[in-house]
Image (cartoon, rainbow, N blue to C red; front, top):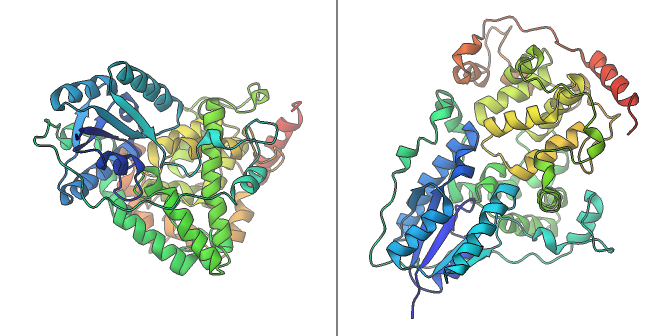
Length: 470
């Protein structure tokens, strides 16, 4: 007998190395479905827009395999039950997610469907190791990255699964919403046209990115990953965020490069494990996405008022600190930001401006097409000092000397800052095409003086830290 399976898609928009899809194809007809529920609706402007692009592209990939993507909006359980009634499906499969909201939703869905007599099953695929599968020698979870890395780096990572030869189709398809009716890109407004050329959409583009990285870049990755003025990273975060490529595929490509003697490959593997570590922590301490991971930071006198002029200047890339401003503008134009710049802009907000990391976390949630709940929370708490394995409170990045070290020829800041230049880079000008008109900014404006100078901000931060008992 064959059984119809609803394949409930979320952040797994690919055909290859997709355990839930592969398992579904073994049993009979498969109906892929995406449900636009409250968790998806709560996404920020850029990640929601990028999700819409990803869904549209993946629907085409399914069509090429003789399948379809069914779209429904509303409560996940209610929609799955409705589809079960309409199709006679007896199985619902999905890829696990690990953020607190998704865990609560998926637990409720699995329990309810099983009570209904449905084979409800979740699969891995978004991570290489399930967060509960790695423990310290005393049985707890890892709170520091280095021992976590030493524990898992030698573990066998499952080989990627091939793309199914066929995706069995049902005799008839249920009705589907129209993606364009959801308006997933509405909040992007005019910024969508600016960011779109920088998007690398879908599974094939992700695989091309990975191939180019391991073939041309990874050998010098140790140094190039810190240079925002160079094309020295994989740029795969955008595709990993929506599951257009799997971490298993990235790992095995990096491992082959390491075995071939490419110097930067182990560092790339470490970066993949850092992503796993962020999920490991989010699973064991879900408070990391919304609260100080270290509770003793709750009393720290951060500013939490987003209306302050300093916060707006930071968001607008008008702090007067060129490395900071370049990073913020890169994000607004491309939807991504170089990791070295992320560290600098985060340190500047939380330490020089003494603002709560949640302000920055929220802004990134709205602006990043590669937004990831675990990595974003981990990155902000690491930078602010309130998180696990964080920068020590006395480490305050100097954004001026950081620019001199990692952008020595000023190529990065010149690419993104237009003010004061007779012939600005086209990307610097694109920034003014993307920003809200209410900001009333133009390339002809004068570049501002620093709102908080690097040395003064560092001293203010250290005075505040040293007056606390950590």
